[in-house]
Length: 110
Image 1 (cartoon, rainbow, N blue to C red):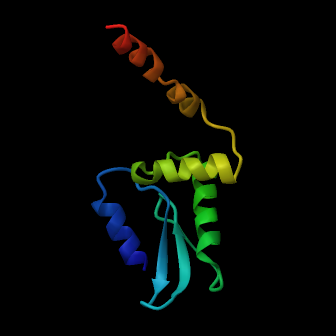
Image 2 (cartoon, rainbow, N blue to C red):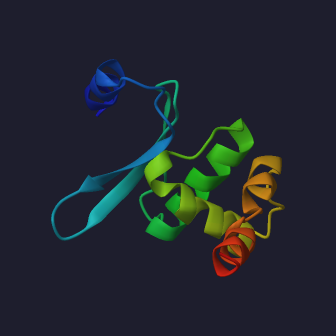
């Protein structure tokens, strides 16, 4: 497993974000491994549920103050705002401003 983690890190073009690795077969995941961006890994207990593993992954991002990977950013934002009830970041607040109404009014007045 450590070899796979190191290979992913070496082949990456960008900083490696924390991620989960599920170890098992086609029928059942036996255990999860939380891999941090610096190639350190934490093997979670065998009876750890997938939801708990995801919980730890989100908390790792928050505790290490790491940006969420772009492809999952909206999912993570939803979970942090609506499930964990964490306050939005300054960046999220600034991006909330929509110019839709202004643009609509300009088009309507043409």
